[in-house]
Length: 168
Image 1 (cartoon, rainbow, N blue to C red):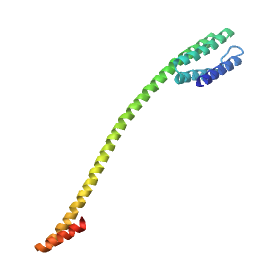
Image 2: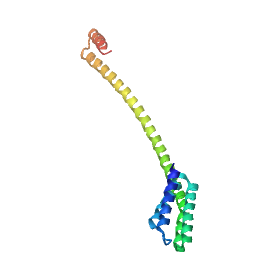
Image 3: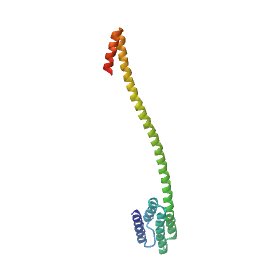
Image 4: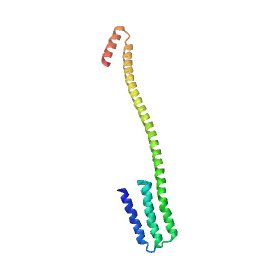
């Protein structure tokens, strides 16, 4: 579907240029739009398709040359159309490298994040365990404090057993 749209757009632009060029002159915006379409096609569909579109544009340039267009203008247009697939290839290659670089950095950052997340879970677990131990130690401290307030042996064990029943 994209190929059909690109072909149709380029053909319409080239026809517009040919219709406009009564004396064999280029319609300047058409050249820019056609080059953009060729580069865009190269990025989306690949270099082969872009070369094919470039060939279609070169045929239109040849027609204008035969119709009497200035040879310098036709040569410039031919050079631009012929270079467009190479430009598309370079753009696609550069963007592909950039994408790979970004994906690699993302994978590295994800590994770091996963490591930090594992460490957070480990620390949270240790913190919970330490809070439980702290609570137990505070309970034992309360027992010891109440026991040391009464130093008689019978009362000491009575307080100890009562406190144990309350706490546990």
